[in-house]
Image (cartoon, rainbow, N blue to C red; front, top):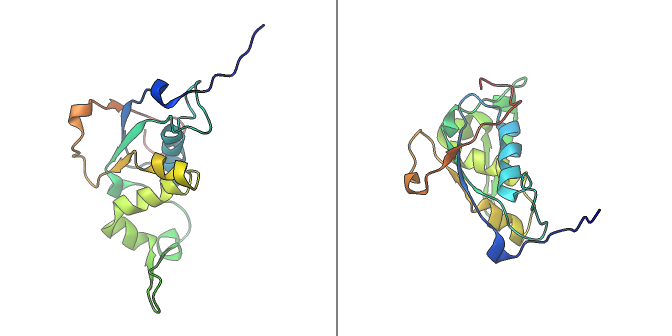
Amino acid sequence: MNKETTNLKKEEITRKWYIVDAADKPLGRLASDIAVYLMGKEKPSWTPNQDCGDYIIVINAEKVACSGNNIMTNKKYYNVSGYNGGMRIRTLKEMLEQYPEELMERAVWGMLPKGRLGRAMAKKLFVYKGADHKHEAQKPEVLTFKNLGGKN
């Protein structure tokens, strides 16, 4: 039995476009499933040193679900500008109400590898607040994840 490992080259990578509805889905579980598709780990031809993932469009980011005791007020997001007194702290409730796109991008970025390859993967994520997006020309396929716990 001959089992050879295949390593993809940049020219051999094929990418698809997927659309994900984030309404009533748990934030962390959804982010980890999206990260798998951005990395391309669901493909049998996954290569660790190549960006072989697909494009993901997330809609209804403001309707994502968060559970836990007092998580809306206890979870904090920090931004540091580099200047004295330049640290900004926001709660999860503020992020969900005012910046749902950034919230989803941060959650997915936490699941991706850090460095040049991870930044290239993160550029293939497009997050929108409502149900409208500007990628109809790419003809995205609807992607549903199993075992998300929310209303599927």
